[in-house]
Each structure stands twice: as structure tokens, then as C-alpha cells.
Length: 243
DNA sequence: TCATTAACTGAGG
DNA sequence: CCTCAGTTAATGA
Picture 1 (cartoon, chains in turn yellow, cyan, brown):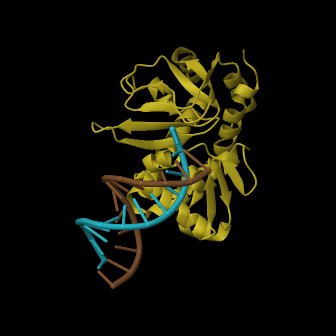
Picture 2: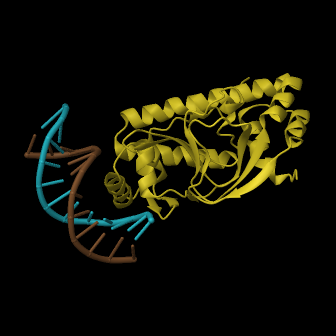
């Protein structure tokens, strides 16, 4: 049940953002986990739920979102393997947003009690998970700035660069492109623009020879201009351990 | 279902 | 007047 691959992305990610000792890594790998497969667009945890376990993304992409009364949905964050998007449910009893799969996913569920026990007995890991939560908050701040201040073309460019850098950190991409299973409608929901405008923005990126986005396949055509447009400073990802 | 495009509209600089 | 973006609607893959 504790197949190594389940934890690989998480251990790799934590080793990138923090200093993860061998014993701490082994303690993580000893956590009891239930692995389940999900299809795309399945709600994992719903706004208002009171979860008793946390969800580790093992394979696939998820997002967190909130829906307002008129049905409009804002995607708040995108999650890749090695992340625990609802870690907050460990300390906040009631979910204040939805967690949904964006692609077919393999997810690992870890009980709150097992996580609490591990964090109680290993203060170094408690500190490390705290740091992870703060990085999550830093990413939210960046997301707000992106959606609130940048023009739509930069917004999309910024998000695509961020996801690429995060995939790189866990060794899931290296070349000039990567796979991101998002429809234009979902990109629109993430960027706070209409689907039609998302389409226009993507066309602009393609026509300007900066980047192509085709059925979930991202291809970078001009790295320099993409960086310029994205206005991307990776500091907020905190991918190097604090000294 | 998802992507594409045109046409029109309005806000704001 | 120009750019950006929302809406509507038609059409294509």
C-alpha cells in the first residue's frame, strides 16, 4: 500500500523548498495512505465539507475554486503532483472552497489523525509543513496580483510560466513545452476573463510567436519575450531552502 | 463539447 | 481615436 511512487513527488518537492532530512522523509513515506483514481472534473472536497483526511496529488492536475451566487466560478490555484491542496483542513474544520480534479488523477488520502501524530512526534516536519503552508500563501498573493493588475495576455503568460517552473521542480518537464489539461473556459475561470477573451489572448500569443496552447499542450516559441510578458519573478515560489 | 471568429458595445485613457 | 474586454451569435473540428 505504501508504494514509493506515491510519495516521490512530495518528497522531491519538499527537498527543493526545504531541507528534508532522511529520517523525516522516511517518516513521510510511512504515513498510511489510501490511493484512489478520479476522472477529470470530479469534486474531491466541497465547500462546506468537514474532511477527516487530506488529499495528496500523486498524478494529474487539480484546482481550488469558489463559486458565487450567479454561478460564476473563480479558480484560485492549480495543483500538481506532490502537493497537498487541502492541508488546511487539518486545522480549519470546514472547507471554504471546492477542490476539483482538472484531469484524470491519482490521489492519496491521508487521515488527519495520522498526519497529526507525525507532526506531533517530529517537530522538524511540523516546521517544514508550516513553511509549506506559508509558501502556499505566497503563491496566492502572487495569483491576486496577477489577476488583479496584469493585462490578460500577461496574466496567462505568467500562469503558464509559473506552472512550468513548478513542474520543473518535481522533474515533470524539461523541454520547451509541457502538458496542461486546461480548456480555454477553465483558463478563463482562472484568469477572471471571459472564454471568448481567453481565446483572443491565446491567439495573440500564437500570432506573436511567443507561445502556442493547443488542446492542453503548451509550447514555448520565444522564451525571452515570454519572460518579458509574464513579468515572472520566481522568488515567491521559495524553491530554495531558507538558510 | 471545445475552439474559433466576427460584430458590436462600452469603459477608459 | 485607440486598446482592452464582455456579450452574442454563428460556425467549425
